[in-house]
Image (cartoon, rainbow, N blue to C red):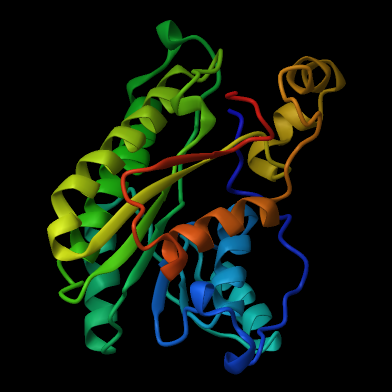
Length: 272
């Protein structure tokens, strides 16, 4: 696992600039963005950055209280946000999430599929079906169903970003199912991009490398593992969650109006 989304570390506080001061290429004023897995780590960094650029952000994760904490931070920085808990491994929870959005008249034009599962580390020969299903249900079915439901509600077009992983291009030892689930997300991104282009919906993916989050702490806390891994990263360091978020902002913003079907690594050169 070279990325880590579910962590307590987040980006430094960001104060939302006045609308008149925002670069129009990255101005999300008037847009509603739904970010899953946004209670911490990379998801929180994304939510806070999108809010700083004018989006009204729906902060979603499994625990409402954790989502509310991120919303409070966004509002304290002058941004607009609200919390709606949902577990994307459960289709019924996704249905309930979009039903709440519909009832509140919230029209999501931007979607970030970031929540992920990686419940098992070890040989695939020893992996149980429960862990397999949890990984696939969240990382593949969850991303697909979230995209389907959001796209049905984007009659005027929109943008979707899937957070995949460098593991989707280069599988990691002990993380076989997680890695190929991330490869599926990359392929899914390309398939949705082709299918939804006619509806003016762009679909792209970001592939984080090793990031300093709790999700990756089993790696980053081991000097031996870190020595080996840093030798594979040309920049010779671990990313911070706030360094992944700008790639998502770019792919959701007018700056990338002619970009769709892209899988963008943010990995310090690991895949080079």
